[in-house]
Image (cartoon, rainbow, N blue to C red; front, side, top):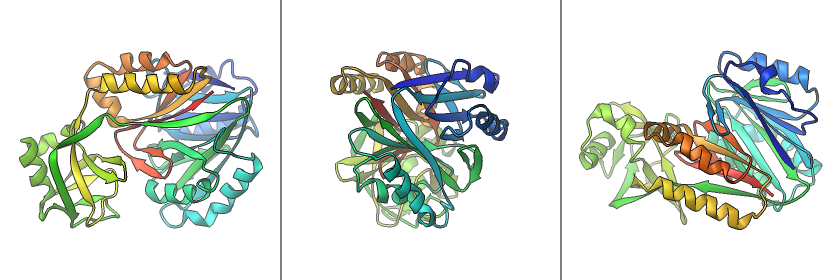
Length: 351
């Protein structure tokens, strides 16, 4: 299979798709002002080609912040695209669409991946999708777009998750998740006074969450929002750690980008040697795939801000390009199988 990437910093879709012929799946990564018109134009240019889209930055060796990026798979790919609606209420109502699509492309865990773009309520959407994928052991990679909008097959949806099932007819697929944080000290907290709907973390070990965070890290209230780049919370999930980013201060509580429940056990995380961790990820992929056709990744917005602040973003994209054709989305949350994670990178590699 092959992967196409085209972009326009000016938001000119015709410029972005120049040279794209016979795509078997298209992913649109647009901006808030032009998203609807880009979805409409794309459908006219490539009618009946499965497509999904969202509002977000894209990249290959450079980042497109406000324009448009188009990713497409072709030459040896089978794909289908669809949407589950009402993700804030009952996405399971639309589960038959996914079940039908899994059957249609004869999916298997060795050669098929699900890529999704979500408009919100990610945890519920992922639980619903994975309830179908797990029976075939199909992996999932995806992310959250901006402005609560996604597109599928030429139509814009709100309160929905758009997904594509992609089958590599000429080789394997495999997904990866990269975590650049590790546990700080021996801090362990029991969460309480949480609001699941608003993602609010009220208290840790009975003490207001804001106070706990400030006391440990010696930061002012104003600094909390940027300190989370270096010190997010973590939730232990088996052998894995789910990163929980802080969105803002809410009185004496903290609003997070991921749901926290009463009695959840949290730890404090700190930034590791991210340059070495990236090199380790690249080595792992190269060991698993001597021949890489394409890599599609989702990098968290906070990783993008952290790497940019440390003048590493261009170097990072250059390092990843050594794998071959590497492109992706800057997301507001990352998806990995049935998990909604923060401040991470997830990716799918095609042989």
